Image (tube, rainbow, N blue to C red):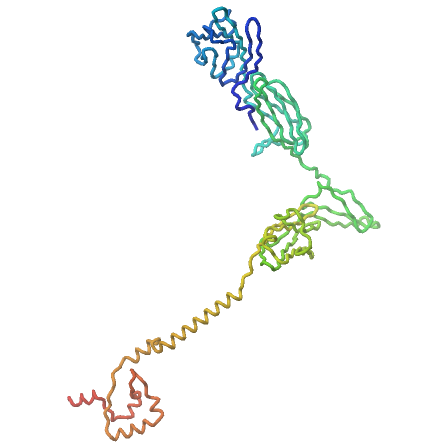
Amino acid sequence: MARRLFAGLRFVFALCVFKGAAGTETLVIGIAGRDVTLTCQNASQRALVVEWFQGDPDTTPVLFSSDGKLPDDARFSLVGNASLHITGLRPQDERNYTCKEVLNETDHLHRIQLLVASGPAEINVRIHPTTVLPNGTLYAKKHDILNFTCTAISQPVPTIKWDFDPSGSPHELFTEVNGSQNSFILHHMSPRYQGNYTCSAKNPLSGFQETLTKELLVYYKEDLSSKEINATSLADTIVATLNSAQLLHEKEFTCHGSHVLEQEAKASCTVQLVDPMIISDPVRNCFIGRAVTLTCLLIAGNPPARITWLRNISQPETEIRSTGRFHVSQVGNVSTLIIQNCSRSTDEGYYVCKAENYVGLKEMYIHLTVTEPVNIGGIVGTIVVILLLGILVFFGVFLYAGPRFCPKGTLLRTRDTSDILVLMDSEDEDVLTEAAGDPAWHKAMVRANGHATWPTESFRAEMPSEISLEEKEAGTTT
């Protein structure tokens, strides 16, 4: 990371002013590319002419004069009829300047030494042999020999130093030199030398400083070539102690055993280390004032893992134990957390089921939502009442409207809405009167349009003497 100090500094005066009979002397420091003003210290209102020289007035021509002498370089100008102003300062402008004030009586000289500072710029850091990761981080192999080189351009020569910031350790200064390059070598790189390496280049004249930092990692492979564990026993059980480098997932260890009397007959068993693995319902719901059970099932893990419950919002990394409204229990590989009298303000949020053994750990997040209970009985009762009211309204309308709800029957009855006049002899009238007393006669009667009609045609066939009015009129016509 590069940074520039004193960015707002326009120019610096290191002002050592010496006074003597011959005049005064001043040291001025300017920054390349910026402007600088050289002030004539002895200029007064009584001065007739002010002249500027690049060097000694006795050996160099006039550079600039207040009486109209203009320089060849347009970067030079006169300010206030006395001070020399230079824009776009260049390194070749570094030299001695003399201000000469011409009075009526005598001439006064004022000498100025101008130093031009530039840089540091183009700072470069190289660490090799290394490999660059996509994020810009460097890595090297363990036991490699690394060369560290830092270069920078500055006028005057910069001061370059190397700083090392190891992870979790205090800052350490490696080297510091006055020059445009600073290099050193590290032999037998080890993980304790991984960290941030910073190169700083400082201009001793202007005080400007540039820095560049590189992060270096040291990669290495664990030595797992040894597969034997130095553990023996003459008993039926043997216990072996493993170090952290041997506790790897799915690593297998084989135990060989034999009887003291039969060394040739051997038996063996294999033990495999496995990371813990758990499953659980990721979302649970609890009604306010009710109880809820969170379940966590351990499906893998050797050696057996210990299951704990944590709360990661209100009490992060705090184990939940059986107390108060909480009850934690484990039966076999199943661990449960029971929360009594759920409260939205204190219980809602994430819970963590954590399974850990010597090989690794696994965490499962469970989100608990606390809601108001829903009155299911009231909803069902409301629906039933609405259905019953609908049925009652339907039958009420049906009974009130009568046959108008049966259009088919109405059409059948309206085919012949005219009354029929039957003429009969007096003898047939007696027969008809007798038949009217028969109940079957009444059953054959129907109502149509509010008038009585005669029975069906089968009944009419039994009375051949019946003659309709139409038939009689037709016969009369004939």
